[in-house]
Length: 199
Image 1 (spheres, rainbow, N blue to C red):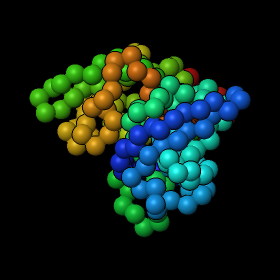
Image 2 (image 1 turned 90 degrees about the vertical axis):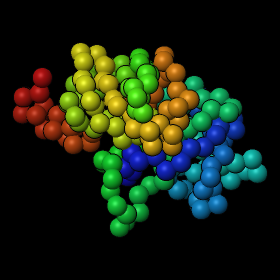
Image 3 (image 1 turned 45 degrees about the vertical axis):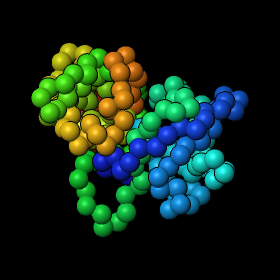
């Protein structure tokens, strides 16, 4: 379980195909504090530490992960958002994030607005139906509040801290981003569907 509060950023060393899967090698600032089997959210996708080769920390990407997320687009030198799994007793400053990416979206807007930035993301229909105005959406592992919800996109206001401490300052329009909808929205939708009340 994660909070969507990005802890730090890391850098991709390599992404190598392994059949229909892949191995991702990262430079992590907290690598010395990890153990085999630990969970790390990488651009919002929960991955398991598989190995500690000399060049970095290795994670295995399953075929399903490559299909659903944008991680297959990573290249050597790409910067990624990082968050380690929550510890019991930690403050909970974001929202419930599982690290289970639901789909990828596309950045449509990235504009300065005073000290802040405006981020627009095109949402697939299966994501949009779970979103509400002022609700939470995880974008590449960042817990963000939807400032405006349009027919096909969500708009977010990005604070200077989030801009500086995540990979967003390197992002570009047209870039794919990983999306995870609010866990509570999924449960409500499932319960309503079971009663024939879902739209």
